[in-house]
Length: 327
Image 1 (cartoon, rainbow, N blue to C red):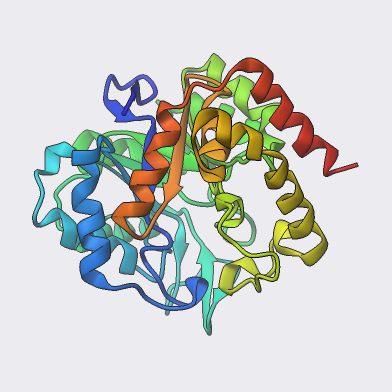
Image 2: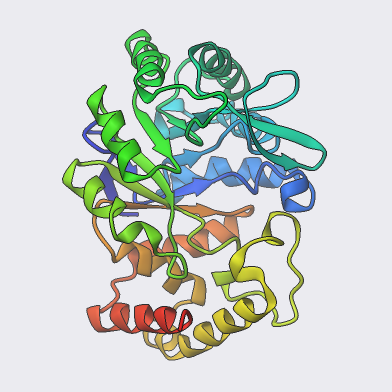
């Protein structure tokens, strides 16, 4: 697996990381997974060249972090770079309304008090004494708004204490990024990016490249749609249901696009999913890829994408097919 630097930290990370939202299971994913299978998957990642593991408290109410922590019990902690997040809370803790998962209301809160409570809970779930990258999961909004200057103050303090080693931010716009950079180092930004959702290309990508901020693309397979494995009569489940590309007409168009990729699959001896992931990596050396998987076989297959060298003409052809879907 090819490596890249994490922002300006000097830390080597694999160009593809393991996303553990689905591993956390729960209502958003239609149920839980076999614990042994997903723990084995995480433990196999370094052996497969993947040293970056992404999780969050909001992934099934801490269950994803607990599973990562269980896996870490049988691993060398220095072999992996762990990303977890703050800013999404639930139960008796309050903030700005976010969304519901099952019957549980989630809230956004990036106040100092909330972050200090969250960091200790995450360290306990993960069974570690430090987090490599601590990321704000969603940005603060009214009525529980906290300025980025105040959020960065507590994050910089946690960094000085050694509880975290780098700071990241997810689901941000360009103004957020510029504000973070005023108050310290921002080494990675997590943003939704797929060949079907290219919204970050106009402003976010150029600003991150200019400021040596790694972009980590999440949902590059559009929650499994771009895996090429779903039948045309597929019925969305859980968090897929409201998504744009899982609406019947859009899903059909996306599948037509993937059918048009078949000659490229033959040319590169790869799967549809490999092409979708390789296309993201072809957009720049500062781009990292977050790939969800729940079995060793899935991550092993996705890893092939990082080794693919798509020709520029094929990258452009795939882009045109995707752009034509919007016409």
